[in-house]
Each structure stands twice: as structure tokens, then as C-alpha cells.
Image (tube, rainbow, N blue to C red):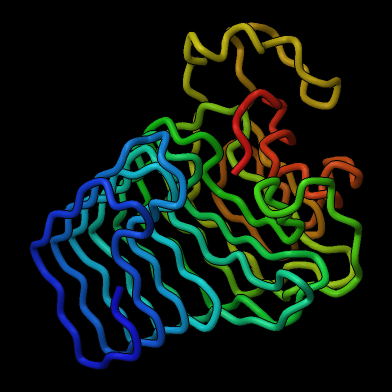
Length: 295
């Protein structure tokens, strides 16, 4: 962990099986992380590869991260970040947040993620905030992402309610962290859950200025370990065995979409409010595969 430092460069290190976060920057400025190789078992919890907290002017480049939790996590107070030319394997993908827990105020802004490969991760781009929180997540861009069997590639979750932190469903709240000015462009590859994207935003503070451009996501054939679940999911997501769905799911997500497949859902609510308002997505259920472990 590096805290309250300025002008730091870390390059060419290999980090294996850390008990907690592998690389963490707290309140740092002007940092370069290049050519890092990070590895931890898929089953390991809280083994984030690269974590940024309250830091700015950070460049993450040419890193290979294979871990059991967030491959790259950008948390409260972080801004002006570039992540590029990286490969993320098996973990939770790149996450922004969560912020706003316990009605706290938080912010993350001006983050660029480009030219990244996601292989077998839970998601590629994931933004998450708690109901009742305040603040904003804004000016975030994801461009030229390659997806290889990613569970649910694009996730915006303003109803975050992790079961590890909240044992019961979260109560619906009116305050929310405002999420705006998001770009997802040149995103191509495959997903395994049936959901190409889930963009779930608050009733009182919708997500605004989302742009989906040249996003093409196809469904992979279901793996053998998931085949027994096909056709047994709740009615809103029922599908025949061996024929995975490939859809966008939205709630109060506003903006534009150009050249998107499958059909996008910006500006259209097409998932039940009860599912999103209690943080069911965060508990691994809204994609219809309730047996998957919550994150």
C-alpha cells in the first residue's frame, strides 16, 4: 500500500496471492503503474488487483491482473485516471465504487479505460452506488474493450446492496449518487449470463448522458456448470435450455445509443422495479441465475 505520496512509479513487479489488496494507492498524486503481473485464486475474496482511493493523476498501463475480486477498483475521491493496454482475467472486472454507503457523500470523475481485454470476468465495466448516498460519478469512458465470456459485461447499479455488507434486502431510498456522462464505445465480445448489460438507475436521480456507440455483444453457449439452471429461472427471465438470452436491461437510464446489438434499452424501463430497488442485482439474482455467488 502507498499512502499520501506524489510522483511514484512502480513497474515490472509480479505479485502473487496477497492476503488483501495487492496494490493500493490512498490519497496519492502523479502515480504510474506499468507492467505489473498480479495473480490470486479465483475463489479468494478481497484480493483486489489494483485499488485507487482518493487518488488523482494515475496511469495504469500494460498490467495483467488475474484475481478473485476486482481486477481494478476505483473508489471514493479518485479522479483523473487512465487505465489502458491491460488484460483482466477471472475476477470482477473493473469497478467504480461502491460509493454512498450509509448516506455518505462521494465522488469519482474523469476516468478513461481503453484498450482492455476482459477474459472470464464477472463484468467488464461496473459502476455501483448505494441507495441513500449523495455525490456523483461522472465523465467516465470505456473504449475499445474486448470481451471473452464475460458474465454481464456492462453494469450500472445505483441500487448496490452487497450481501456481504447488508444481510437483508436494502430499503428503497430517495437520495442517490448521480451518475452521468458515461461513454461505452467499441465494445465487442461475448457474455455468458444472458445479460449483455444491466443499467439500473434510481427513481429520483436517473442516470443521464449515457452514450452507447458501436457496442456488439453476443451470447456464448452456456457452460456445463450452468446448464441445469436453464429453464428454471423466474418468469421474467425464463429461457430454454441451451438457448441463452442476450439482452439489455434498463431502469431510468437516459442518453443515446448508436449501432448497438443486441437492441439497447436507453430511455426504456424493461425490468421490474422490485428487482432493482432492493439491490437484487448486487446479490447475483436479477440475471436469473440465483445460484451464482453474490458479489
